[in-house]
Image 1 (cartoon, helix red, strand yellow):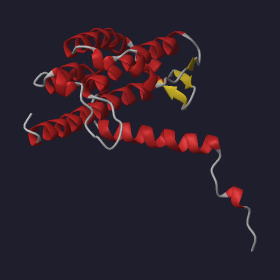
Image 2 (image 1 turned 90 degrees about the horizontal axis):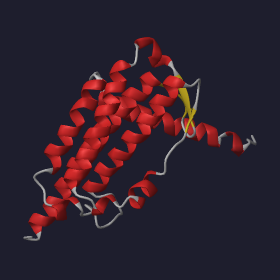
Image 3 (image 1 turned 60 degrees about the vertical axis):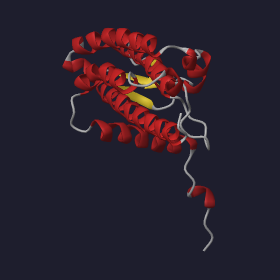
Length: 194
């Protein structure tokens, strides 16, 4: 029997949809039954607790020599960027009908703003400020507005309700990443007697 091998391969749109679902499921799994607003409100202090015991040398170090990764400071910088981006997206969706919401090249944003050269306290202050403004907005969104949608340039249609949960799951993902990276860095440091 001869089969058409192109039928077995997913289209670009199908692959993007599959990747989107995988990403969304990962974030939803991290959030579980937790209240997303509570998670978002706790994140600034969680970050501060994680990074405050460490020197700037530790926070600027890449945890794995065998592959390129962000440093703990760059992860915090990324969270600052995401806070601006999500805040803009939420405002667009609240005020416009089905706006297009653009994706971001997070690697270029982190590199372009040289987050690894910044001070931890400064980044935490930036994050707290923008997060505070966005939390105020999230708390004012009425339940019936949670079904309003924007069309993400890479992931397709997303409602405010979904975005809120993804935002909180994104926080939890990066908090875990910071913990893992700091553990790897301090293990290297301890092993080398620094």
